[in-house]
Amino acid sequence: MTRRAVSTSAAPSAVGPYSQGIATGDLVFCSGQIGLDPQTGELAGGGIEGQTERALKNLEAVLDAAGCTMADVVKTTCFLADIGDFAIFNAIYARYFPDPPPARSTFAVAALPKGAIVEVEAIAVRDRA
Image 1 (tube, one colour):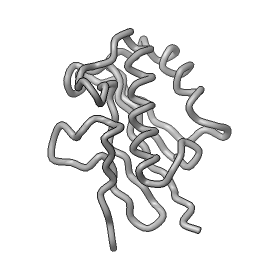
Image 2 (tube, rainbow, N blue to C red):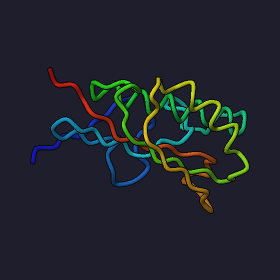
Image 3 (cartoon, rainbow, N blue to C red):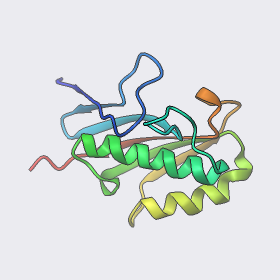
Image 4 (cartoon, one colour):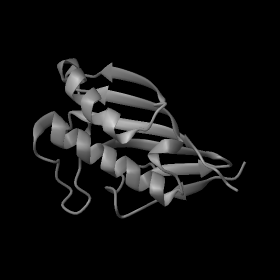
């Protein structure tokens, strides 16, 4: 198996010993993205709306670095610090993924890195033609 790291300055650097993404064959595995601004390293303002927008833009940037788009995503896993934010998160999330949307799991968690309130990870399939 050959695998390569996916990296871009358009998304925040990893905050631990992991890659922003890994590409292997036709698959791209994107690490979870939180609402960090890649330029400042600070969480986006605006609560769940601002952090969701920024997290999804960060995810788009990692996918782009791997030669993918949001349309190539087949599975996401989403983490919310407050499940009460589910409806607002859904409304924003829906704008980023074309029909049919990817399969998805969403979990409420006790805490996320850097005090974030949302995190989204994804698996995409690349068209290597």
